Amino acid sequence: MKRSKPINSATNSSSRPPREISTRAQLRELQRVMTAALFRPPTPQWGMQKHWTDDSRMHDVAAEFIKPNDRLSSFERFLKEEPQWSAPRQELARDMVRFEWAQVVAFDGPAKPPDLD
Image 1 (cartoon, one colour):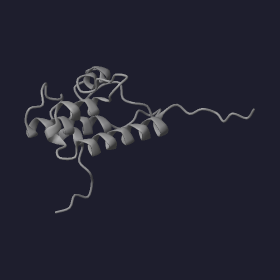
Image 2 (cartoon, helix red, strand yellow):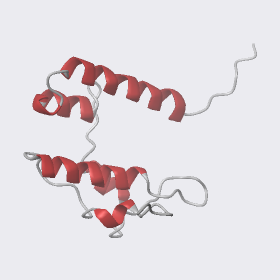
Image 3 (spheres, rainbow, N blue to C red):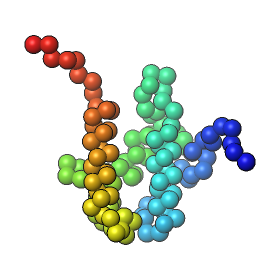
Image 4 (cartoon, rainbow, N blue to C red):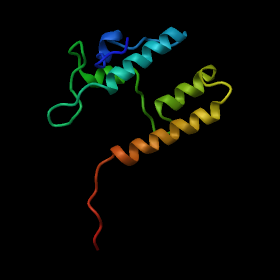
């Protein structure tokens, strides 16, 4: 039976990501938590919610699975450290991650007024 309304993604997931990813089930759980983070409704001002489903700070929850640096995104680093998840097309998977990140930077970055000079 097809659902008439999407279900809340946070209800199908534990409240926090797994501490380590050594099984497919743990990877799925991490994906569920990440999806729940992405699909949280925006604030009335269209900003990111400041608190997670358990009322902890969103920044603290995100820091459990997002660890940026200036060389690799957290997902690129994960693919490099866990190549079995993208085998046999590791390089294609890394290219896809770079492209996705470029889209985030291009479309979600700060808007700048046009240079009229």
